[in-house]
Image (cartoon, rainbow, N blue to C red; front, side):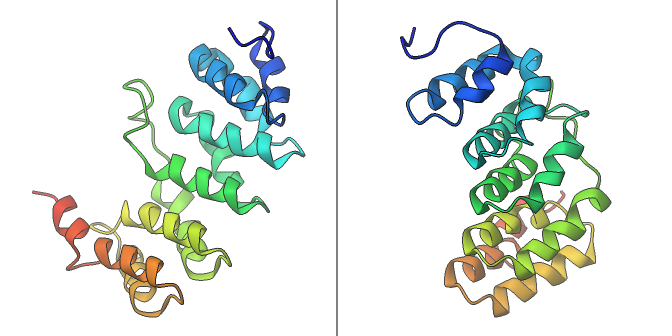
Length: 181
């Protein structure tokens, strides 16, 4: 046990997420607590400290439940780009979800329009690169996703974003691998 972090409840661990010495231990305790930590994690998304919000978005990547999706999606508006990156990852990634949380997903209209907007206009290229993965979730079902990925592939100012969008756009390697059989 880490001597810097006393035993406690998830709400106690949330405040430690803003402390560089205690943050990682508190984060792992939240993950270990599982669904019982969700109310505190959702509350931490509103913390004034961006480190706390970032860790809470990361925690929801693994712990998300249907009740948490609206709060997580709202974090796409966060002023800190690191929070937006981790939020987009939590929305896009299925690998991090447990069997209990992997099946609950937000609807296309809750996420896709905002992800397309982020891909087109976010000032931070790391955020745009992660938005590619969210938009790509619907590339086989929604023409808006195809258009957004092709636009990013052809016009984004950063080569990294153009390359990643090309993987997921029609004709790209990730597009072909994810095509329905």
